[in-house]
Structure formats: C-alpha cells, structure tokens
Length: 231
Image (cartoon, rainbow, N blue to C red):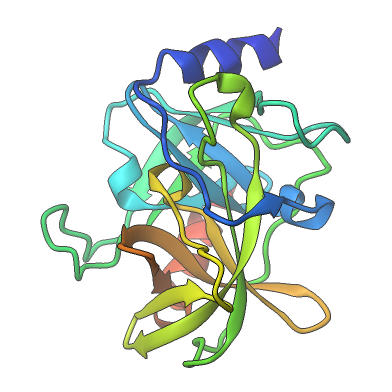
C-alpha cells in the first residue's frame, strides 16, 4: 500500500522530469544513500545524512508544502520508490536566496519517521573536488512518462570547472552524461575505496551539471543535523 501510495503521488505531481543522461541503474550501495523527495508539483532527489534527516536542493522545497520521501526497500532495482516518510520540518541554508543562482541551494529535511535500516547516512568528504576528478552522481529523474520508469540511476561525470562552493560536471569521454530536473538534490560522490559525499546536484546547463561543493558548507550541515537529531 505504501508503494502504491507513492506511485499515485508521483503520477499526480506534475509533468515528467528529466533523468540522468547516459546513466545505469544505481548499485545497491548508492541506493542506500539516496531517496526521492516529492512535493505537490515537483519531484527531486535527496541524500541521507541521518536515519531521519535528508539533504536536498532548497529550490525543491517550499515552506508549508506537504513533502514525502521514498526509496528502494527491496532488491528489485526497477520498481518505483516506496513511500518511507512524510517530512516534519525544513531547514534551508541561511544564505539561500531563491532568485540568486549563486546562493547555496541546500535544504535539510527532518523526517516524521526514521528510514528503514537498509538506508545509511552518507559520509561527508572535507575535500572539495578539483578539475579532472571523476565523480559518481545519482538521481531519481524519470526516463519516460510512466511512473514505473521512476528509478534511481547513476553515472560517472568529470569535474570541468571548480570554484568556491561550486563544481561544474561534464561527460567522461564522448558519450553524453548530464542531469535532468528530477535529479536536483541528488548526491555527488567521490570514490576511493568507499563512497564519500562531495556535492549535491542543483542545475543543468546544456550538457553540463551544476553542483554545490559541500566542503564549503560542512559546518552548517553538521550543526543542523546535530540539532535535528537531538531528542
């Protein structure tokens, strides 16, 4: 029933969102970090920071809006996400300004119900990505018109530009690889034997993906998670 409820919710949440181009189904490790965040007229992605705390893009959420969080709870990677929790609270980055594309597009969500045990918090990487770094990006964008096509995908992208608080990601090789609207809020991981969270996708420009570099905001993220996780 929870699975059906989120499928219906996604169908009613507006037009289809774009998906990661050139992507494969996400592996089980990335699935454990990544959720879908759905509003009345929008759908984005998010990354787990604590059992009841999720990081997403600030432009994906509006105060007073009823938000739901979903994800994969089984082994079948081709199924749409199951409903996991409603959102009890939203904390936007204090410097975020909706009409300022240069402001930190980050929001942290407090969930009404802790996520199932298969979901684990992503580890924040204190290092900002550099030009030439290959990173893994993941998102819940839709590949077609049917809600059944809403699956988590991931793709390898390379840092084309890096400047304070931001990275611009492009394809690795000649094949196209970029994000779509449904992938906003999706995690960007470095991989050195384990996944570590270095960025959050927030926008696309042509064939490139714009992501917030999280190292510049790690203190705010940790402090907010600590406050939201306190009893």
